[in-house]
Image (tube, rainbow, N blue to C red; front, side, top):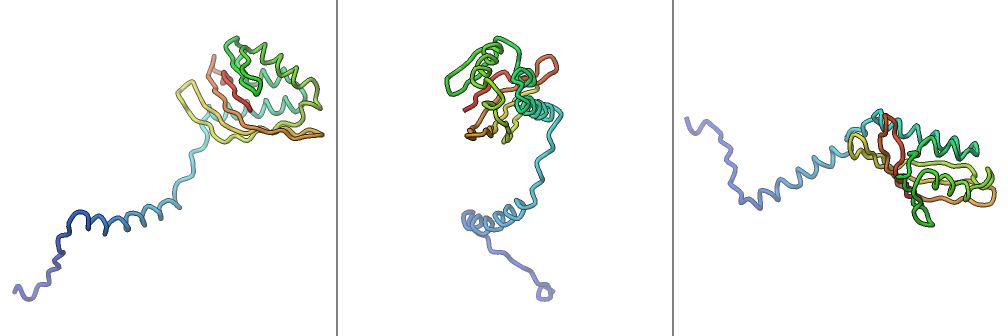
Length: 165
């Protein structure tokens, strides 16, 4: 009766050889799954609000309205920090004055566009945003990068720290 049964006997492999046999299979499975990875989740309500504020800022800038640009996104507080090429500026009023001095008219302001590269949730009340900015003006087209720390204050997302270069 034993002769009529076919038994498959697998030789016992040492752990390292077993790993060398299994590793290519696992790698193949992993690579095949990479192409089918799920799309990133859609932005949550907080990210959507932050993106809307940035759009409102660009719209105000492109109308030549620095006051509305600042009001659309920045925290109106003495604790606001803006860091630009000339160093840090502290406070909403000082940041507004800095912007008005650097961009005295619509021609100097140009047309502003933002490219948001990342919005990262740090906590329920803080978000980190990284992106690129570009100005299109008659004689030049300066561009750079920015990082923003957003905080939820009184139910509204505002920039509490801006580093733009």
